[in-house]
Image 1: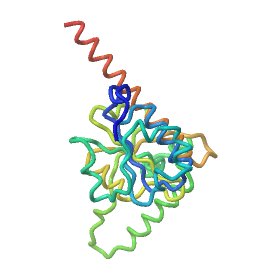
Image 2 (image 1 turned 180 degrees about the horizontal axis):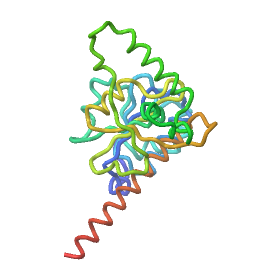
Image 3 (image 1 turned 90 degrees about the vertical axis):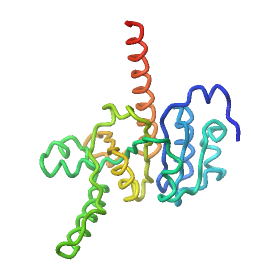
Length: 225
């Protein structure tokens, strides 16, 4: 498929990975945001709704013809579709849970939702069931940072998980192996989490903003010389 020349000129070193997104309306909205932000590519893992399903097409409002979409990828082959030196960042509010053990600040600000806490408790219970001396290397250690701090110094891929199961263990392992982080979008107490499409839009346009600011700084530095 060929894409509009104007779209190609505005593509950014920013990719989107959809992790088990099953709601067609959400996926279509996310694709529309990805095209609007200038994503260079959208990758869909196995388990996602078909990108060409009619409800996805309606919600995407033509985004299918503005951004390359690669369907039905497994996690073993997905890295082959990432540019060299890409860092993978995961939208996962529950990432601050580990820090909450050391400080109540996270829970005070409502940055840890009940659903995601229960998922991490499940990981902890599985970890506790390991035999003495057994390896815990399968548990990724991915640092958490606020979404509005700089994360676009290298080509970046953002993982958005489905609302039912959240992000997969494989996505966290990929983030760990590429030197990426969990990106935290804080919400006020009482709000469980953001809609997947809303979270994707916030992160993608924040990435676009960071890249624009970096380009402006480079241009300013060159003018001084």
